[in-house]
Amino acid sequence: EQAERYSFAAGPAQLPREVLSQIHEELPDWQGSGFSLLEQPFTSTAYKQLMSDTEQDLRALAAIPANYRVLFLQGGASAQFGLLPLNLLQPGQSADYLESGHWACKAITEARRHGPVSVVASGAADGFTALPAVETWQLDPDAGYCHLTSNETGNGLQLRDFPQLSVPLVADMTSDFLTRPVPVERFGLIYASAQKNIGVAGLCLVIVRDDLLRPPSAGLPAAFSYAVQAEQQSRFNTPPTFALYVAALMLRWIAANGGLTAMAASCRKKSQRLYACLDHSELYRCRQREEDRSTVNVCFELREPALLPLLLTEAERAGLHHLAGHAAVGSLRASLYNAMPLAGVERLVAFLQQFEREHG
Ligand code: PMP
Image 1 (cartoon, rainbow, N blue to C red):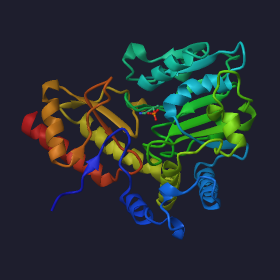
Image 2: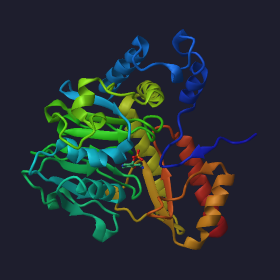
Image 3: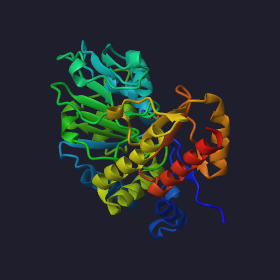
Image 4: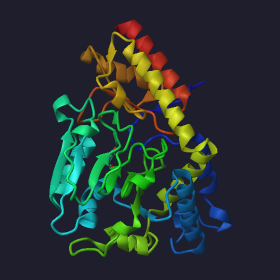
């Protein structure tokens, strides 16, 4: 019998089996309507109910205070990179950014096209293997906002704590939102694409404090105005109906499996298991500073890089898929999002140890 396959892809990630089965079962006839979910108008009473239930579930799960709006948008986190300055900066204001790795660099490059940006600290000199300590950040007290990347998907770095700042804190949580509790009240805005921990591609969550909503300035398409979408309950235009439905199922799955505290404990346990294996190996090496290591994207390398193609081929044969590192970083990466069971990590560890015995 074929053993279970695991995808360690950084995203789109594997889904829990139960969620996949439910999609499969419900797809032909959603809620007895005679039509599939894919065929539901977003303006129908039933679909509007799905949206408001999903928002309520998310608010409960992530402890989102009442003065924050939840937006269901398209365009992914990459669109938000440009939309943040367009939506949040007042004339004359600049934005602060922490340059923590590949995705922060992308956010900075795009933001610069739309407004002045100041980098408060950078991990570039360390090759993005550690996060700059908060005491070293050169913060601008007049900045329109300060942007962080809570988890650097490609570099395997994760912020443990979030500072309390006088300017609105904005965070790209694309790769670790809903993998741990976060103090939402400390942020002006949180955004996350869904395809890692919250379902499938096409949906980007934006959680924004309501005092930051302003009428769209010239040059900002209304569909990408946080204020316009908030005003219209994310129905200014057609929302990503299928991705939103999958997110609804994922939220219920996360709640049924113990909520964010349980997700955090699971991600800690899975990643510690893998880091321990790497740290005790003669063949593998993890360069990331221990305190900054991600619990969801474990990045590592081979002391004998020539073995990489063989390792990836043998891993696939063993049912362990998509272990190649980010294209900009190379080497290896195992993504251990919410849907990855501990059994998958145990299988990976056993495989890596066996590979080391045979080729190390
Ligand atoms: N930010 C982070 C931290 C990411 O990991 C990714 C996707 N890997 C993105 C942004 C970009 O997301 P999208 O492709 O949905 O635009």
